[in-house]
Amino acid sequence: MARILLKGICKEFKDETVIQDLNLEIKDGSFTVLVGPSGCGKSTTLRMVAGLEKQSGGEIWIDDTCVNETPPGLRDVAMVFQNYALYPTMTVRGNIEFGLKNRGVPRSEREKLVKDISEIVGLAPFLDKKPQSLSGGQRQRVALARAMVKKPKVFILDEPLSNLDAKLRNQMRTELIQLHKRLGTTFVYVTHDQVEAMSMGDEIVVMNKGAIQQADSPMTLYQDPANLFTAQFIGTPA
Ligand code: ADP
Ligand code: MG
Image (cartoon, protein in one colour):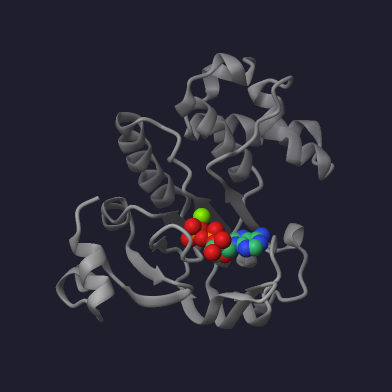
């Protein structure tokens, strides 16, 4: 579990400012959803938390450490993307344990971790299969398992269900909420869909044009929107 603090974060790409003085606390153990229109800066913000992108100004804290100079591999943050790439020639097991092998985790420990995680995400019967023989939902679970096996303090999920059909997406939403309860890890989930956001998060961060409009519980956002943007964005059906 971990608390994340963003203090005065700015991000410029060439001459364009895409994030402006962003301040946010993501609570320890929360399921926080970052929601806003496409291009508002959600992915950029979280790529900075993961260390995949360097902010132009400001500080990022994870628990009691300022991670501005901490490389991505040492931040204890795992990220799952929409366009996750699995290794096609490796089995499900190989895909899940790849990062552990790289870290030199011994075989017996790897086997135990892969067994535990594959049971949690329902992949135990598929460990010896290749990704191309799996369904879209099963492949997404492999991507989740691959991130989970490293036992990160923070789990970032950037529109992870966008490629799935509506029925499977609903099922995976429920599974992710259960997974969060079970792990107790801080989850940060990104979506452009306000209905998805409101149904999943216990804290919702509404973004527009590189700035936070409001960060509150779903109930407060709904009953007491801070401005017109939030009122309209939350109030409009997807
Ligand atoms: P979101 O995830 O909310 O859709 P992004 O964080 O991907 O938004 O993008 C925010 C803004 O930053 C967009 O205007 C996008 O075009 C711009 N942007 C993102 N990545 C880059 C990049 N590597 N180079 C230049 N501009 C970028
Ligand atoms: Mg994005």
